[in-house]
Image (tube, rainbow, N blue to C red; front, side):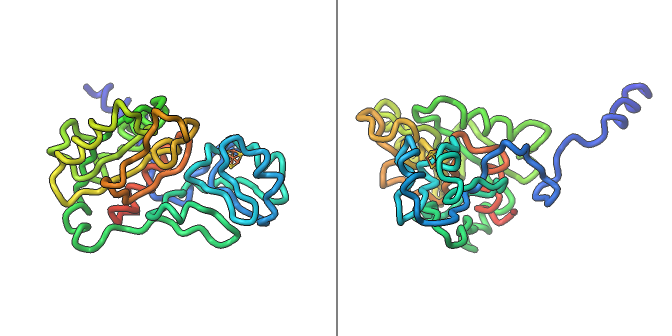
Length: 242
Ligand code: SF4
């Protein structure tokens, strides 16, 4: 017994403090893009997903963070190590030279309900499972999503929020609508990953429909897939815990 306790003491604390200024991601991590100039012709020509429009900016909702634009036009686009990328409005994901507007918290009435206990039902609507893997990892000891009162649940009837991944294929559209309808009100919706936001690599494919307009999105989490810290930051921002 004493051996077990000593081993446990030696292991120390494995869960990372969050939010924290001490989080350091590897140099190769590509976070929030910084638009240095709206002369984006070269960057737009290099983007395989049409996420950049010259004179307008970079649509982080379509971006898969491949880095081709920054390699082609380093004087126009660069990637920072900032992992806090989530937005409340789709339009806020269009990055220009102006400051990025981060996600806002829910209204005070909703925070009273969700602020301390927020249960999520996840629907994988036709994606590649990378976003799902990064949601799964949030439940491990390193991130420990549960300490914030956030948990994934297996029934929409027990859920406060719907987290959608994937481009919503025709096959998954009905399941997604039924899941949303089965959730009690009030409820929040999270679009997680480039596919759920704008189709990602599948954008424009006839089998991919996107989240239907009758399911209003409250939080957009960009990335392909988003880093677990980006997802964690977005969810906590939504429920006023960031
Ligand atoms: S990082 Fe995003 S915007 Fe840049 S080329 Fe890749 S997909 Fe396009």
